[in-house]
Image 1 (tube, rainbow, N blue to C red):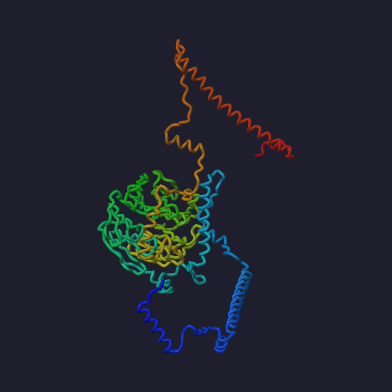
Image 2: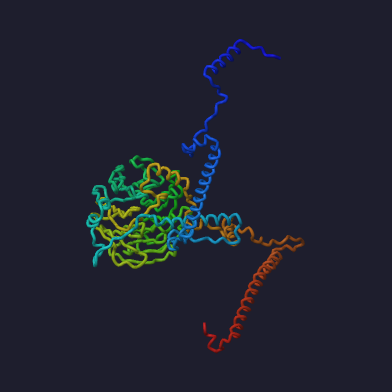
Amino acid sequence: MRRDVTFPDLFTTKMAAAEETAFGRTHVEEKKKIPRRYWATTAEQKDGEGKNGALQKEDSTKKIREAWWKKKLEKKKKKKAKKSVLEKKDPFPGQAPIPVERVKKFVRGDVDKVTSGVQGKLKKILKRSQAVSTLAQEQAARHDLLLPEDAGFLEGDEDEDTCTIAQDDIADAVDITSGAKYFNLNLSQFGPYRLDYSRAGRHLLLGGRRGHVSCIEWQSKALISEINVMEAVNDVKWLHNEAMFAVAQKKWLYVYDSKGVELHCIRKFNDVLRMEFLPYHFLLATASSSGFLQYLDVSVGKEVTAIGTKMGRLGVMTQNPHNAVIHLGHPNGTVSLWSPNQKEALVKMLCHRGAVRSLTVDKTGMYMVTSGLDRKLKVYDLRAFKPLQSYFLPAGAACLSLSQRGLLCASMGDVVQVYRDVWGTSVKKPYMAHRVRGAVAGLAFCPFEDVLGVGHAEGFTSMIVPGAGEANFDGMALNPYASLRQRQEWEVKTLLEKVQPDLIGLDPSMLGTVDRATWQQKHQERVQALGFDPLAHEKFKPRRRKKGRSSSGAVEKRKRKVAHEDQRDVIRHTVAANLSKEQERKKRSKAKLKAGVERCALKRFQK
């Protein structure tokens, strides 16, 4: 059908035709210009607009592509050449080997051999744990080079004895920060003083006999808190951090915070003389004048156990840092080792002919040093429980303390002497010596510092002892420079990883081993637990017979017959064992004769 043309369409077509005639050109026949390329010059652009423009354009693009591929191939060749050069230059691929001596420094116990009797799943677990421990040892030995500090000792000039060097001379010779660590606190009104350093070594706790208790950040000399409990103080001890401490007062045991506010009064712990805190178990061990050893769980606030030692007044106490066993010194000269798991002592050692005055254990748990009223200082090897060295001191040692690097401090009246390497060789003279203003009542080495704290009747003295503290600390365990946030996280972590009191024993390495108890041992334990032997044969009871055959005489005759049968079995076994031994002896004698041993009448008397 034909479309009708409307008025607007006619009008628009006429207007377009009029415009084209007016300008005299049309857009249909117009030729487009070739766009200019970045690689073409002005002359090439003009030529390209002609007939050969398209061919020249194709040639230029080919040249550019060829140049680009050449550059790419050259780069690949250079990279391969570099790799080959590096491979040729590295004659020692992989990680550097670790010296065996350095690895031995970080070994924790012997390697457990996995026997064939262990099940498959348990064998995998043991192998995996062993692999983790060996990896940790190798990493610690490899990063030992990064430790910045090194420990040193005091060395004198030629023909100069180091024990004659005064503390004032040492403070003048060292730098200002180290010289400020030697100072005296005049506290003659409330002495003598007991002291305790925090585990990180930043805070100091002082407790005077007449009731004065103070917390000090001793490096900056800043007083944190100071109180007077208005009764006698026997001992003071920091708890798991610097926020709380325990005070053994005249009657009961009290717990205070760092500001001096009383938190708890524990009346079950009365007449406490000495205290020790076990940080990995959160246990506070106390020794009383009535002869009781008590354990308090600080995380819960409950008493774990109370053990009656039955050995009199307990005025001498220390702990073994290696296995958390408590060592007690007694008036009869013995030293006993205790665990909260048993009501009896694990070990009892007769160390002195008189009462034990003081004792201390090194951080490895291998050596114990004791002093007694017999004026002797003895060093014991706790692995064999045997004495290594014995020294005679004219006045006897009242207080003892061991540093992290094995320096021994002993106090005799108002004189403090420091000894070096007491368990290796016999020591003839002290390493250092110092005289304080009053009789010494407490000694303690500051962790990670070459500082010895001395509490005496006239106050407190801080001594500089070169080589006493560990030069490098483990920031994951004890960090002296930890922030508030780090201390809070560490407290939560230690609470989650708290070790139960049941795991305290003489040998802590037994926890990771497999129990290989024999059938006889298990049977004996079962008999002790039940009170009777469940596998024992029942006694023979004759059956009752009639017609007078169950008279008392007839019953006894039948019992004797059965009893003789059991005895006959035992005799048969013993006779067979003796025969086998005799046959073995004859075989040996025949073998000697065959070997050409000379026979002589006097050979019978030879052992």
